[in-house]
Amino acid sequence: MRKNLLALFLAIAFISPSAALAQKAVKITPAERQMAQAITAEQLKDYLYYVASDEMEGRDTPSRGLDLTAKFIGTMLSRWGFKPAGDNGTFFQKIALRRDVVDAQATSVEIGNQRFVYGEDFMRVSGNSTGTSSAPVVYAGNGWMIKSKNLNPYQGIDVRGKYIAVYGEGQISSPQSLVPLPSGLTNADLKGQRGTDWADAALYARQNGAAGVIVLPSKFLQSNWASVRQLFGRTRTYVEKLAQPAETPVAVLPSVFLASPKMAEAIFSGESNNPLNGSANSSFDLNAAKTINLNVGIKPETLWTQNVVAIWEGSDPKLKNEMVAIGAHYDHVGVNPNAPGEDKIWNGADDDGSGTVGVLAIAEALAKAKTRPKRSVLFVWHAGEEKGLWGSQYFNKFPTVDIKSVVAQLNIDMIGRSKKPGDANPKNKDLSGEEGIYVIGSEMMSSTLGAITKQTNDAFLKMNYDYRYDDPKDTNRFFFRSDHFNYAINGIPIVFWFDGVHEDYHQAGDSADKIDYAKMEKVTRTIFLTLWEVTDLKERPKVDKQLPPELTAR
Image 1 (cartoon, rainbow, N blue to C red):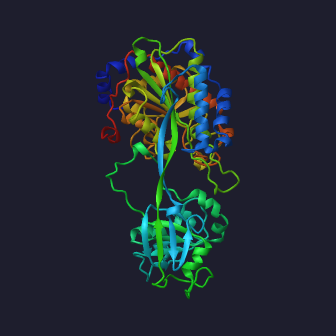
Image 2: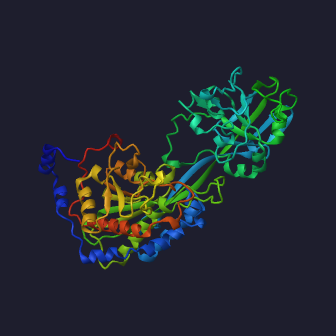
Image 3: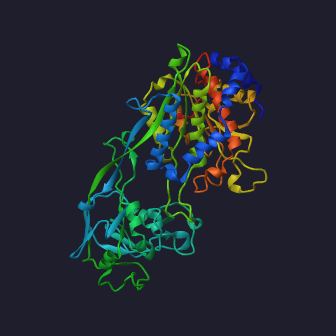
């Protein structure tokens, strides 16, 4: 694309001193090349086969597998002589997570003279309503309203203030999947606006003032009751110190409960229509005298996770007080017990095991180098990226170092996959090739950092740097979807390396055997030298670009 000549003249005439410094061509010395060559495909493969192994159980936040990965990283850093930069002289910045758990001792249901026990007779699968309530029941088939298919089980019945009983042969991976779409329909049939043109029972209940939803027990759910107890009964987990202020009202969502066969029999006992034996063909109100008396008590539960933080101290007496940050998220999305096929573990080899071990290999290369960089290097492995950039947000709000001393942040999130010649899979259409990688953010904030990034690659391996996503108007919004974003919010210029979405993105197939380790070696070596060049700058890179509103508004 051609540039406007006047714009080009103005860009040259008014370039900042630091940017002018960066315009001098980067030269990679033989000694620097030798340092980069300490990073090898074999080394990356060894580390990744451990980090993305089944034993790490998909590294969910929080989880045992994530904790084991953190300990592995910390052990290597200690062995190589890094300075701990977490809490209390450790490599770990602890993060308290909270969720509310249904208190089984304080939760019960009464129907008539029968009392039902939480965990044995019923389970809450979603919603956050608590306290005592009493309400009648209405039956609404499988609960799906879909206007395009002329389906509306709520015609002729009023659900306000009542429990909606629904029935379906569902799975247990999510509350929505408990009552799947009617037979023969798919998500493609959900046309129009959610809540207006179509709705499941939980959404309909919320929009129409129902007391809640009771899912009647299918044969599948009856045989998997133990799994239900493990999956549900807890509210959403959140980072305690990042939670909304207490005075901010939280919307009360009607609860969705799963009933056991025993409780379901009590609900429909004495009714002329009974979906449990197949005699109910349409929606109807149950006997108004029959009410469900419910009391829900909750208790808070605290969980813990951690960022892994370390410093490699620089050699220059003055510049070592500044830091160049490099990081990756070491979490993924865990285990899905109801995934199709035999593989239930989302190993996250590319996302972001590749970035995790890439940063680790860069740390090892620094430790083995004969010289130290002028500036210090801050290493952060972030937890909870998949939950909403938790770890990077936490670190930037509650840093364990002087965050104002961080002059730039280099983020590595997915650098291990490549599109092979002849690959016609449409899911791989945007996957970068064996010699390519997407570079995001370097052209968006700092002329200096952008120039250093480009010129280091040009002077080294000349990979195909693709800048198509380096644009705040990118419809994929990749700039806003990884940990570098929270550093950018803090006014720190960033660069983000990314191989692109592919067929195994957030799937069980994202495994270590599918990684292109030769490409990963090239990308990691290039990032190492980019890091080295930034540590060597006489002045910190200035933010001299017009920033997207998401950054300037904070």
